[in-house]
Length: 125
Image (tube, rainbow, N blue to C red; front, side):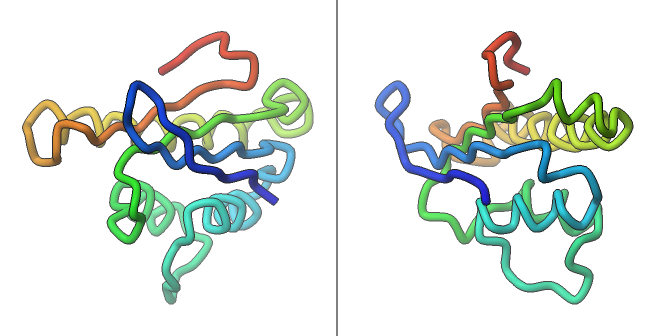
């Protein structure tokens, strides 16, 4: 189960989701872990990569408009299923790029953010 909480970062309300990547080693498991964290609406194609990307690029149903995803146990998950972890990171990078472009083009309020951190805060994308 994902650990989700609200926190203030630089004066903004963030929905922070700590995702245990060991629970994301299949497409369906990853989808449901993020669905639980972000409260995805129901969809006839639940579990698909396309629906995951659509929901993560939208998040309009959330009261907060600033989001942070912290991937925990990343190295352990890489050892168990390196391809799945690579796909997860690639999808989250697509989501982050979407939010960054929306911010740059002023299609969203200036306070909207999407942050992606890794457990040890080694790198922020």
